[in-house]
Image 1 (cartoon, rainbow, N blue to C red):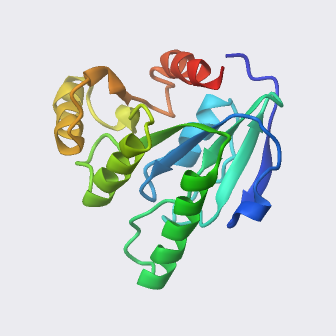
Image 2 (cartoon, helix red, strand yellow):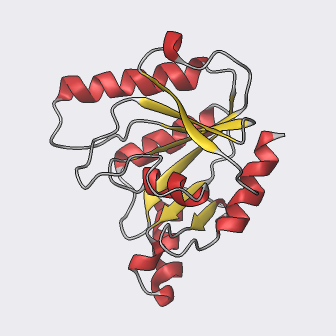
Image 3 (cartoon, rainbow, N blue to C red):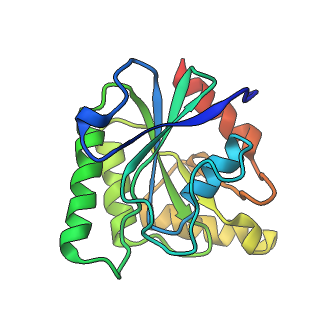
Length: 194
């Protein structure tokens, strides 16, 4: 996909703040610090459109990025950051839940996990939610450049087993650094936007 323009379209914590149009959206969910913002930036060839931070738990809002004036990437708040109060975690959970259950623009939700680590119980809960709502169940395993290519299959197998994924093609390794599988991912995402 040729990215001509991209911009932050809206920042929201409640439905009244969502963009009020019918552009299709693809949302990205994942734990704090799995590389959601880096993934979005690398896919749209921008350095810091989606804000990345060394401090996990930074994204506390739903961030809508408009691309080519045709569709949006939606960066959901990261979950599972231990140094945040239970009340704050519940608030983030409610923000995510409202978006996912009420947003008619949503075409696909993709789970992002860190390829180096076994998915957590919260990842499994999110994945089961994604499947229960009839979405495909695509998982992007980021930070692929941080481990040797020889370890990929072993790590991908752990992810598939933990999330109970039978179809190996649903778990795609990705590196924001060297853009591993970028074209394949765009091909999948483009198919969801029609």
